[in-house]
Length: 233
Image (cartoon, rainbow, N blue to C red; front, side, top):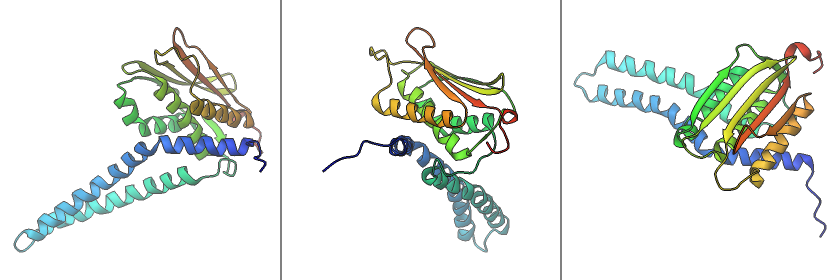
């Protein structure tokens, strides 16, 4: 049987699967965080029901908490489903604030960053707008950040900078490498990085990988600012 050589589309799908698999704990953290408020509301309702004659004020408070929790929880679940199932080449290009998106991804990875005790140093310019499929951009930024977090030893700095450079947005992720003699990402990380670079290139940008210093690792993502992109993208 002839086994076809993997196409770029298959490699891209594999890279996205690796990102989603690696993000499992972060997704669980998001789900559990949203459920916590619901549990609190149910606890208040239970206490109210146990009181003789009931406690109307407590019941109303619990109902208010439950409604607010459900209102907040639904978009969280929908965002998770969209992130896990979106097609990287089928999304609609919209105006995206790259700074807001980057900060969202960092919040999503807050437990991973904390578990490694990485010292987060973040400088993000405001209102850095590009035209992109938001979920696709989120996936590749998430993937690139994961490769840096996973490749860094504990108790080291992780520097993230977003700024304008000429007609492009520039996202820089700088970290240290594990002190194992490793000079390049492992195979899975290398695939994620290669496919992220392919995505940026398809949108008129590019990704550069290079040393940030001794035993350092730096990722530089260039992406056209919205003012420099034509109406058809």
